[in-house]
Image 1 (tube, rainbow, N blue to C red):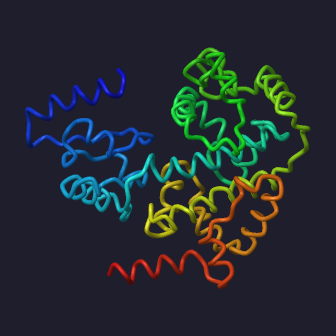
Image 2 (cartoon, rainbow, N blue to C red; image 1 turned 90 degrees about the vertical axis):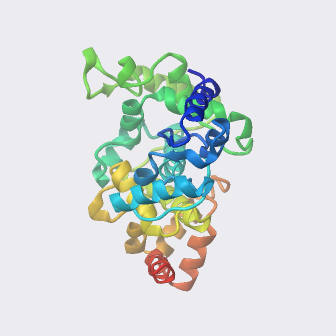
Image 3 (cartoon, rainbow, N blue to C red; image 1 turned 180 degrees about the vertical axis):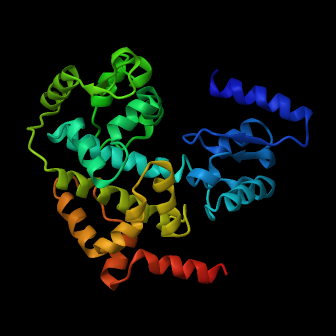
Amino acid sequence: MPEIELTSSIGTVTARRPDARRAENVGALSLSSWAHTIGSPTRAGNANTALSGRSNWSCSNCSGVMALECAHSRGTGRIEKVYDGLIANRLLSVYRQCAEAMMEDGASPYQIDQAIREFGFPMGPYQMADLAGGDIGWATRKRRAATRNPDSRYVQIADRLCERGWFGQKSGRGYYIYQQGARIGSPDPDVESIIDAERIRAGVTPRKFSNEEIVRRYLAAMINEGANVVLERIAPRPLDVDVVPMFGYGFPRYRGGPMKFSDMTGLRNILVDIEEFAMSDALFWKPSPLLVDLAARGADFDSLNQFAETRHA
């Protein structure tokens, strides 16, 4: 059912019940637009708030209380500010862009998945894309195409797969082939041929990547965007960012989450990596001002956790 038709129908129902509350579970939609479409901004909330860091309850005091109670009951902390998507989607978008660039530049999706699993994730980004369904990301990319920065790099490999109806496990084929409903896929030579063709179209001369470089780039992208999420007050503390990929995407808990991992690695080391990667794509690899500031002062993300806890005590 189209989004407007669906929200209109929900609006009709909620109009009959003044005590009704509506919680949606769609992370890529703006809660504000949904709330106003149903004509009842004070009765809209997001079921993902407690799980994925959606900062939505400034729409209304009532929905705020609902979301806050849910978040506290799950022990997932406090979050702020309305925006398009979840903290999780914000991180996912950026590290997927990083992975897409590496794939077009010479790494196979299968090598990328292997490197990320070796780091400690239960699955790599392309296994996860096949599990979730490629059509979901494709719809989001098409929805955002009109506002995409024309200067930013856009890798079209995923679109080529979706145009063929290869959406992952649900269609039996995505980045991997799933024989007779298998849950574990096998590498697909046809996908590699599509990637080769896209490299030629984009004028890219492929190079080799080590697994170590793949992990460095993947994590640097996640950490840099996590810093921006804190800087923009989408999440009030770095530890709130850490919770999301650990519980949502399987970031290895023993590594503490991306922000804690960067503290243990050293923010200056992360920044050096980002500055190196920026030599080939300065727009994507623009260092977060927060990361630059902390590294220059010899501080770390955990110091912001302590400050936030003191401020809100």
